[in-house]
Image 1 (cartoon, rainbow, N blue to C red):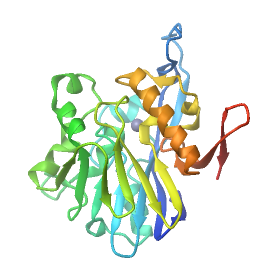
Image 2 (tube, rainbow, N blue to C red):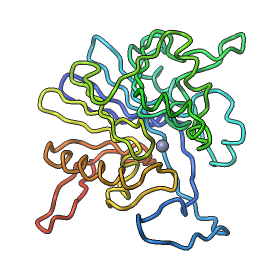
Image 3 (cartoon, helix red, strand yellow):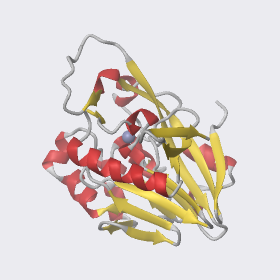
Length: 281
Ligand SMILES: [Zn+2]
């Protein structure tokens, strides 16, 4: 396939959105909070989703936000989620003349398999090692602890080989809450989808970009009470989402919808009747 890369500027940063692949989830996993819906188990309706990673370059450093599915064997996931052309991240980076050792910082919104899978890779000896050998990987402390807990493990969304080797290699940096992790790049703890989920704000030269990850995975989720069955604490998620949307409108931020297959950015506006409108970019 041809590489699907969308490039734009955020002040001094060149930003690139890279599609690592496509996958599908059952349409019945979309819910409206508080409204009971008869789940039709026989329904074959599926929702097609993208796996967007964002790369930022300012001439000094290369920063990567989320790592997609990666190139380790996917096992059952490949058929269960109808995964198509995964592992485009590294070839697409190569197209931008970025080799894995060039990446300085990897920010992981959370550790679910579809966001952190490409953080590690297999070396020649078949050992699982960091895929970006010179990078520091930034994860919320709460996410790290949750992913290792029995409850987190029971969710089925975490695969230890995606992230445990980062710690062993001394490449892990745990942050707590909101923090500027690089000049102009701020992470913000937003619990709800999982206990240690973080969003990323990039601000430079008067431009603001919000990478909300699974807080607003596609524009459908701009509807406040729309949630996923995968969400850990939907009520917390809706409250945090309301606040994020308010600030995205106030800052006229460009929002990156990570799980949209195409046309992944837009600006939010509030109409006279207080509706949130999306202007695609
Ligand atoms: Zn996701």
